[in-house]
Image 1 (cartoon, rainbow, N blue to C red):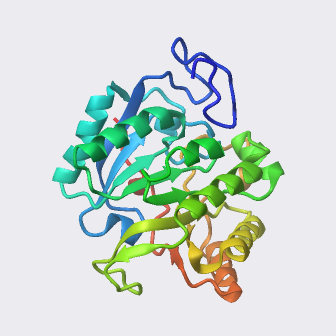
Image 2: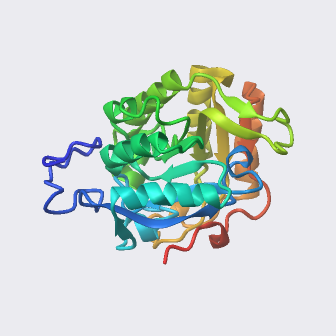
Length: 297
């Protein structure tokens, strides 16, 4: 990190001295640690997922749903020992897992903390919750430490990823990262057996790839889902999300300056079903609401 190349940005900043593209120095900074009830049902369950939201982000999408922490100056610097203590506090509160949200730019620090926490008896599944804009080497370094990968696949189109995430190479980077995640966790393993209602069923190992449907971009969503299904079949779960909410100023991007319509979302879901997708999650009801976005004070 003295010449930072932790992520595909390879900004070269000495993070001992100043923040990199991600907005963070070497010190671990978190914006929130709590039980979170609005993940996929096999992650949240009844008790909640033990989420740790790390400050900063190496992608910085213009429509970021957690923009307060990704772009703003929200968060509290903690030591490695305090991070480990946070893991155990979440376990004591009944968390089903430890869910590391936007962790990419802190991988070495997180890796060290996980090794020590496991040595101290932490036995919850570890969830790695990421945009997928990751170096493959970073993901490889987590083998044996992460049980569940929860990556996004946002785009196939380089034009769209360049426009909305300043990352024209997103698909190439994300597809390579997800391939490594699936290599490590090639099959989902659950505790409980009700995979229809997910009542009392929790994921212990595996990969769930999320895709957020963007307004006006149904065809792009179809391309993403087709790629994932044709590449991995039912060895992964695909979570198709309708919760897009304009929480930042999107006046320069009028085509996405609204919520996804029911018709747009249904078209994407129907496409996935027609492909043959069975291992998936969909969202119902009014999830496109700021009430589903955690408060990061």
